[in-house]
Structures are given as C-alpha cells and as structure tokens.
Length: 178
Image 1 (cartoon, helix red, strand yellow):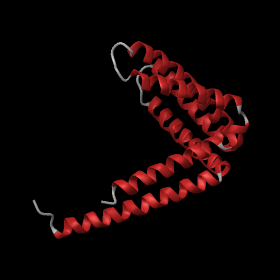
Image 2 (cartoon, helix red, strand yellow):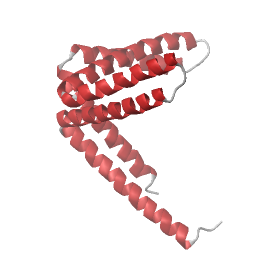
Image 3 (tube, rainbow, N blue to C red):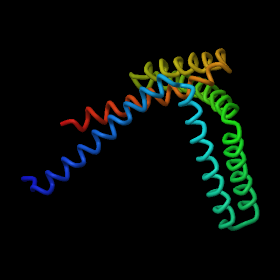
Image 4 (cartoon, rainbow, N blue to C red):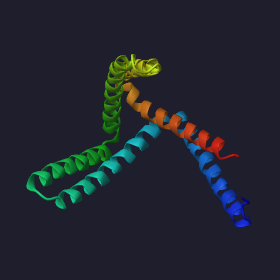
C-alpha cells in the first residue's frame, strides 16, 4: 500500500505540529521547574476554574435529575465544587496549601493500599514486588510532603507539573520524530 502525496503532506504537517507542541511542552516544563512557585500558583488557579465549571455543570445536572433526593445530593455536590473553586480563586496561596495537603494524604493512603494489595497478590503474581515498591515509595513520599508542609506547598505542585510537562514533551518529540 502506497501513501498518496496528500497523505504524506498531511503526515508531515501533523508531524510539524506535534514537534512544535512537544517543544513547547518541554519549554513550559523547564520554566515550571525553574519557577516552581509561579507554576504552583498557576496550577492552583487552573484547578480553581475547573472546580467552578464542574460545580456549574453538576448544578445543571442536578436540576435535570428526577427525584428530590437525587437533586438535593447532586446540588450539594455542585455547590461544594463551586465554593471550592471560588475559595481557590480568591486565595490561591491557601488553595496551594490545601492542594498540597490533599496530595500528600492521597499519595500516603494510596501507598498503604498498594502495600496491602501487594501482599495479597504475592501468591498470585510473580511481579507483586513492583507494587510493593511503589506502595512503599508512596508512603515515604506522603510522609515527606507532610513533614515539609507547609513549605513544600510553594514548590511541590509546580515542580511536579514542570517535570510532567517536560517528560510529556520528550516522549511526544521522540515518538513522532520518525
């Protein structure tokens, strides 16, 4: 099967766009790693807007539901999302603190769950050790976030966003450079 000239041109254009996006993501990642405080605040503000839009969507969804109980719970959830978004946007520093604390707790609890599951899988799966290592790493990272809190709140999220953007850009660049 031969590619037509228009297909080849389209692939070249798509490849250029992907390369451009990948390089842009790498640059954003490096900037976020160099300036983690600003990346943390920016990420917090983005999450605030996401919560506001999610709250509005949940409230609209609640009014389209049938049954008073369903409407009430969905409405409460929508209002919580909306209030969380407003809180984060009005005080992004406090929002960053809250996000970091929630992240630390989540990673710690996930680590505990993974360790527990790993021991349950040790007789079934020969690779259960990887889950155990991941769980232990999660517990250690969760403890690290707690022990360095609140100072970690001002660099942690921004640094992780930067690392994620950087590596996403790298894999996009290497995957589509063929």
